[in-house]
Image (cartoon, one colour):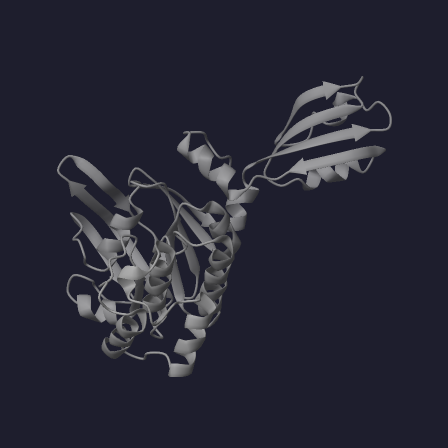
Length: 303
């Protein structure tokens, strides 16, 4: 357990007859960036709220940094930087005043120099009242309050919500830097490209059920790849039918052009192509978004 930051053990949450979470059972390792994927209503925010004892699970257990959130909620909160998805800040504070207050109540706050550098990178208008800020700038203040202490765990619910593309990238850079220092990062998102960029592992939740958990690269590599090949001369189909996990989808131009579907690794396929005069080759590897959509359409992603 010393290498485990978060542990879910058969976690359920019911709202009457609605099963918001159904049997979550997995671990997040210390120092990893874990992306928690699902559309709105899938159970992402409910999971994070249970982790902080903001709501109580109906069944099962959670362990955060070796602590039980129900028996030691303050111990958990002191060691976690939290950005809620439904961010609600006191609008009468200036951003600086609010963050100064958060620094006082959190342990091991960043130095004034680190605070100013973080504000600069996030471009936070520190001296404006929060009620006058745009939604994007409020999100930046929320991110700063989550990052203001040197805590071992960050729980970030949709961290780039409402930010422009350049600021989204800066936030991802900051998250990666925190992980490199040993911080564990658990973040929920429906923006799949950002998860693919930084997450070590991914969990996909669908209607409260964890349908897959895997290393990000492994999840993508297991999905189907499409390859279109043109040859300088005719190459009979018999050269390919023996290859494992390969399906010939189309044959054109008297066996000079093929479209293949490959499941898993493409090594055998590439070595076979090398025996023939290839004129053109186009390989389409799936993105995390395509893999994710397969789960939500109920299609099987091949192992």
